Image (cartoon, rainbow, N blue to C red; front, side, top):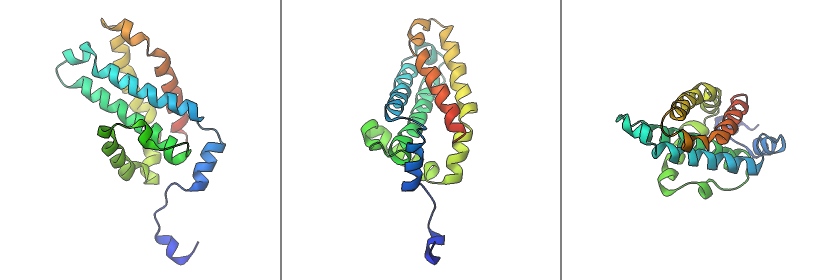
Length: 162
């Protein structure tokens, strides 16, 4: 390491990408599925009559939460594993939010690790809302996302130890 390199911000390097991809933390298809699951569940929350009935913006809050989780998987897809570009998964609305997440959390190694360590506890809040919806009049709609929820839960456990 040269003298001037000590001032360089540490972040994702090509060797980190290669290690994550070669260690098979996630296969490309698995990440695509996780990203799409986050998107689909975000839409389910946004369209939930039960969440809208609470009147406190819960539907939008849950949608935004799922889009934040989507950003984590998109970051792994693009930056960590190097499978492709993030833009392939982001709408124009989401691009700004992704850039902000990247600047404030993902590109800061200590913040990123803290974010990943907190995933299981934060995901538990989503599971609580999901279970409540299972017992509501929307149980039929919600049931179709159970496999996706289980896959995401497993992925978050894996990420929390990354």
